[in-house]
Image 1 (cartoon, protein in one colour):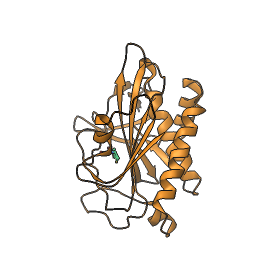
Image 2: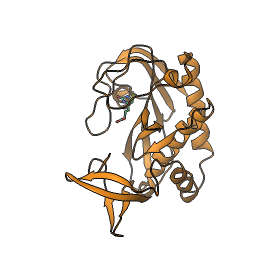
Image 3: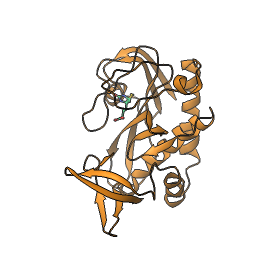
Image 4: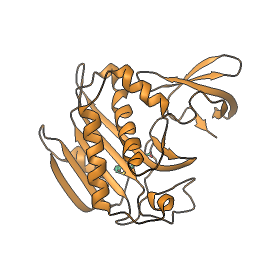
Length: 235
Ligand code: BTN
């Protein structure tokens, strides 16, 4: 694997996209991003040298019709990594990792598609490690330091997270098996709670996530609806 450590970059995902690493897997990390990106045009905030800011370039051999498995594997790897630090995290659909009701990490996965397979996957992970003060504009951030009350060595944490990511892709099971584990770790799975859809408050429970990553919700009246990211908001 090629490892590229940067001080400042606009976004490690942008760097990964423009960098040619042939067929070799790559890890790009940075101390700070000037234009860190989240999903749906959101930005990603992180203080200088405080948190994990990485992008992996992987070639995962996953069929396009099952491409959500990439998100499943990465989310589970991040949950396993946190568990190794005695932090019990959940996956908040579609790309967040939560501890309790607070966000500790976000994933930005950008795939290149061939005819039937994903040919390349850029997996961006922002994970809060040593930052203890966050801008008030962020709704609910948390970091490892805020949980364990101790600074971590950032390079060690990047190394450890990388091991968990590679292990998960190497040991990848069938889609159905991985999806089963994913649902076990899914935030608010099978729990009735409130969501906002088109400005309306909906009371329902998450009953599944389909192969394309759509969220399947059952309302209290038994009506089943499917949502893409940004069509539904958790409250
Ligand atoms: C989200 O929560 O919406 C996803 C956030 C992803 C942030 C990471 S930080 C490293 C990588 N580079 C980026 O520009 N974004 C991802």
